[in-house]
Image (cartoon, rainbow, N blue to C red; front, side, top):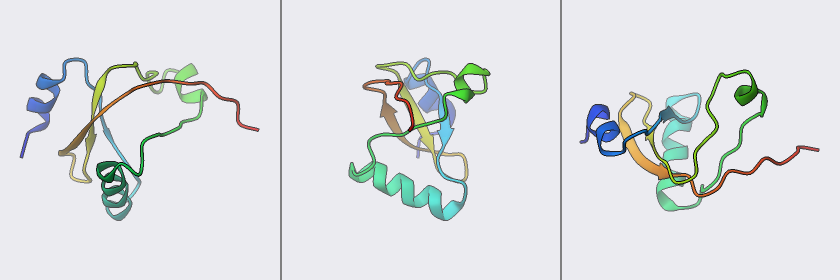
Length: 86
């Protein structure tokens, strides 16, 4: 298994992020990502405005973490769109 340090070194500028809010949901989301079923995500604009998170960068590869904080897979941002929620 690749360490987080090795994954971050391989993908310069990568951001490591957990998915889900429980071990079960984390495993489910990672499985959907691996299978290609889950290919998008969304967040509230407020977390970018207040500086809580950095806006994703097109082309950047990031590291999705398993529930234990280990690298599970790499993701590449293909597009970033700001869409109003009605």
